[in-house]
Length: 466
Image (cartoon, rainbow, N blue to C red; front, side):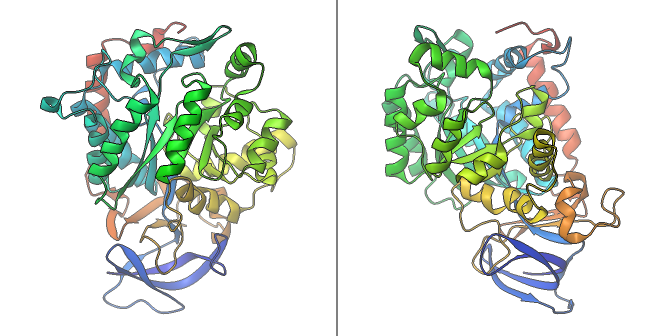
């Protein structure tokens, strides 16, 4: 298949940083880019992509089922903790069938906005009582299989970050047992988690549209010795490892009370930090924390829309980058499903924190939304319009009310999901003319969310502290 791009964002000198080039033909063979030919006119056999064509966007941090909370958590303001009560209600209601329908719609919404790969931070593993699904109901990884099916149907690549979640919280006396609403997240031990994930990796080994990585939910949910064991598994498997870090001050306070050190120091001492690891949020960091993350080459995934919505705070993005941490972005709880907006939010937050513009130039924002996110998801060859890369292309219109008159090189400062017209993932046309191949994504979302809440049987706008 051949695509002709009116303008395309091409990497400079083989690196991630790029620029806009006019009249570019991209030829695809078996899902990868075989030819990139700038400065050529369109021909009759080309699929034409207007506006400016970016590499596929990477959503490096997703909790698909959280999408059902959008617009339902703001009675009396709420807090992170009341939001969490609603999240638990949703998690309890999920069945494999419900999860697949919801995730399919959520991933299709992402695809409409240009996402071609998603990192699913997946911790809803078992039945609601914590027992594994038996073979007759799909087996211990049936919830993961639901996500794989959903991603395939929606046309996005999936990195399943299978999450180790063993403890219910961290108090001054140490880690606490899982609460009833958390039982389905846990595997009991890292060894049991690893057996389940090893089986999943073997089952998916021949599927080139999925990867299986690892996650530690947080220092609240995994003890230091278990963190060390999990990190060893990830290194031996060559798998990306992600972990929530210091999203809320309460996590820092708990770690200091129980262990006398920050969560970042706990991760460092357990051997978790390093180039294969991505810390998510990293909002409330000390200077020493920033140094530990940067010096180890640990990546940081920022989720500005969630961090605003939950009143988490502003992460020290520029300080982390300067210290040596590669940055990526994610939509997390999906209060928005717009990776371009997340990348722009990194710059906007830095402006608010420092009173200065331009900490992250437009080219860097494109990198955060594309190549850096794919690298964090174990896809280092993706996120570039270059020979050998996966054929992931996203056409962004330059004639909408938001983008009209924009310098194409600065499109990252103004464009969002609603400006995406066409999406190609792995050489397959997933979105054409603003329409997803699955049909009416809004209706798919509405139906799936209504069904989940009917099972959950409660309105979280009246949630209480959890």
